[in-house]
Image (cartoon, rainbow over all chains, first blue to last red; front, side, top):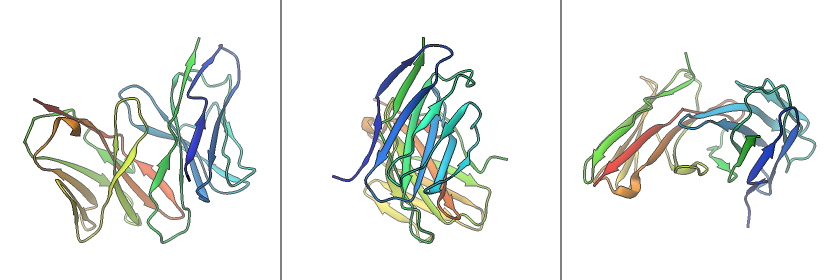
Length: 115
Length: 109
């Protein structure tokens, strides 16, 4: 079955540590996105990538880094520079071809908690 | 100004009521429009696409007004199971997907 998979579902991080959240899709989508959602808040865009080896900062990129070495994979690293990383992280993908109706498909999310 | 704006609510409505949400977008070059539904502590899921001619899916009707740059979602005969957050989504350019912050709906028995 095609889909988008995030792992782990729950992640605990000690202060000062970097952690990497995984996002893999087998939908052959060009575009991938990372969002952060805080309790009672909407989705805020961290980074997005429209094509392999290219990515752009979203609205809240500080303290995060990404890579896009393969079409299927778009990992997000939450660095120690991110002062308030506890949140629900959602990865999404969309087909990425201009002119087509580009609904986004989401992974099930990773809930990150700093301990 | 935010690219996509929604009233956060919450909208508290009795079962059976009709409720409508609006969402405004700032960029006239926006190309595709969607409504997503997000249940508590879950990922958003596509509810319906929004077409210029308007579209209906059962109790749900979506409309797009390009001149005024807004989209709307109408829910008729509200059910308890409709309680969720409804996210407006706008895409433009080469798949730049922008989400609104969502409107929370609570249907009350």
